Amino acid sequence: MARAQPPKQARPVTGKFVVKEDAPHFPHEQGFRMALDNALRKTGWTPGDYKNVKVEQFATINVVNPGRIIEYCVVLTPPPPTT
Image (cartoon, rainbow, N blue to C red; front, side, top):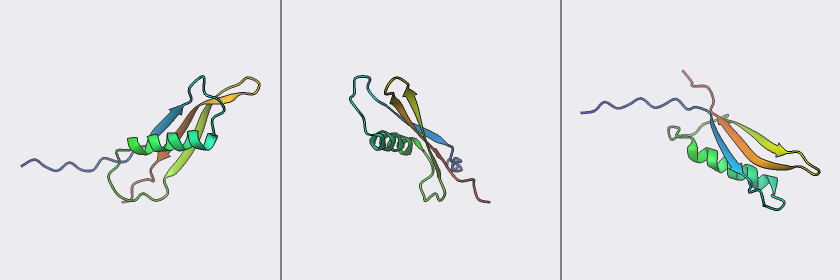
């Protein structure tokens, strides 16, 4: 019988959403929400509740007049493991 593998330690994960170049004005809350959804799909963390997950938002911008966000990023960082 195969031995059960210990659960993997949760690691930070990044989700991104790239705005199409020809897209008109894009709502920022929608871009960050889509990046967050992508990060959540990629976690691979052991099922369960995680308190105090750090959620950071970043953006790549194109600076022209008036500038625009071309990529939305969200990083999910799990809390430190408890002992």
